[in-house]
Figure 1 (tube, one colour):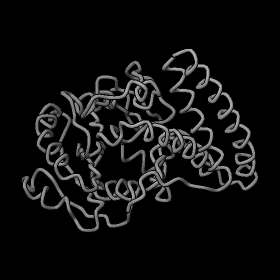
Figure 2 (cartoon, rainbow, N blue to C red; figure 1 turned 30 degrees about the horizontal axis):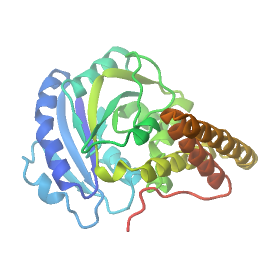
Figure 3 (cartoon, helix red, strand yellow; figure 1 turned 180 degrees about the horizontal axis):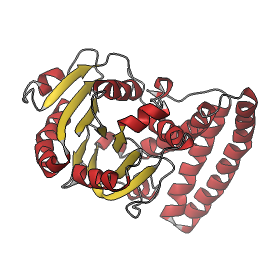
Figure 4 (tube, rainbow, N blue to C red; figure 1 turned 90 degrees about the horizontal axis):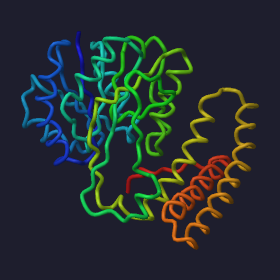
Length: 306
């Protein structure tokens, strides 16, 4: 088999270099599964990642520049660059693969041959974290038993069976490239069209969380973006104007219900000194506001470039 590792990147030269340096060991662990290569898709129009890639052998890693802005465009370019491969494993440029990362994904795929296999992403922090931020749950990703079907997947640690993905006609929606949720929509379309996504608990990557994402403001904005993306994904999953109208109409009361329930939980938690109820309640408020904003036609571009 031919297996590609796809790395979308945008102006993270140091972290990209560290990731590329870590991959040979992970590739060696999976060598029995087939020929393995690496594709770096640089989403910087100025090509800032090219000098990083040039430090590594051309037989190990290929470079492609995708000037269209947004992670969805970069992921689609990786799909195109891997057109001759059987499998494509996505890993983000700010992640580090732990031992057996790739081989664990491949073992699950080899046993069950699903359309995709999703592994764990574990947050590690560059600095001490405000306990309130941790209490929001924004960095919490629960483990599951290996082999469990999952209805939705993130693409930070995701193996794709390219034959099945092409057969299902699924690609990443580039209108969500700077908003987020493109991997949610992609994976839900895979499942909706008959594909199976399985969980692999042994496949682990570390997500290095920078200091600027350890603030209360960022955690709440993340909640807002999550609610906004949820409704925007629902709207894109249907082509029926009537169904879209119903989604918008339902999202408004559902969002305001979260605002009310979250606000009450936040207030009770604050009065009782319950950090979890306080933090999670306020995050729920922002998630509800994000849902309402999407219902009235707003797409929040969390990854807007300045």
